Length: 348
Picture 1 (cartoon, rainbow, N blue to C red):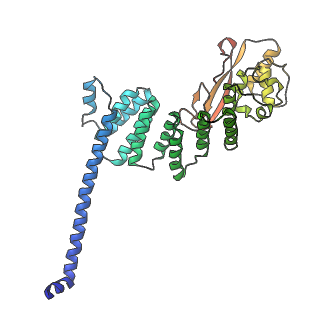
Picture 2 (cartoon, rainbow, N blue to C red; picture 1 turned 90 degrees about the vertical axis):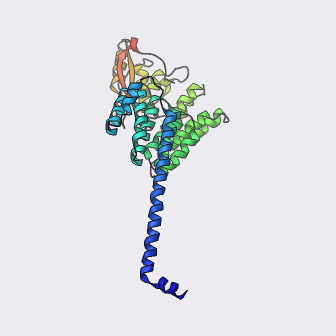
């Protein structure tokens, strides 16, 4: 027994024990890594199988699964297909690439890109599932969180969308506008609220996000709610030229407004006589007012909607840009068109 304690006090014995502990820890860590890598690969394979597209193009699929083709080439090919709008082939290539890629960062990138492709193709439910898988690998992926929010928003799952916004906010993103916009959409869809309660709640949200006043105005028109003059005069008319152009005078008479821009729209529509104003007038409105003044009525007003964030132009109004998903980035551009080409209808 005494010999044992002597050996225990020997420094060499301590070094041996230390190396033994380090070896055991390293050995365990290595096999744990192998186990987790195998488990992750099985998870990805199972995930890919769930979304795999059934196709008769066997030769095409065999070509994609050829190990001699670099992953970078497959990713570029998928991107090219997605860019041209051939989402089915792009998705198929991304799924094949996911099977072959090994790195965690590469998998996370491919899942995020695959989610965006599903989103653009209109498969919102699948898109949300892919983004959730991407976030399982990398919970701090802001791009996946952003698109997941929009996917839930378009699925009208506003509570889930707000939960995702909480995560974005934790990462330092500014989400006030998005949160307010989601609350406005949820309020409009809330069946338990009376119309007057909805309007009251929407007006409260307008204090945080003034651009929602247009949304309130549209909602009131759609549901035949009386528009008070006191509310009408507070509207952001610069962002509502298209609504003013198409508004039914029986719903609200814009000729009674004292706002210079509303008067210019009324003159351009020929509702009131044209007169020169000191206020700066949009070119198209000024020309139309002068044409009406001389009796020419074969010209009309057309609209284009520019996102000043991504510079994309769209034919209809948006609150969230369909391209970059930014909120409150629309700029209305007016153009002169032939009256025959004008559709005298509202986009409401």
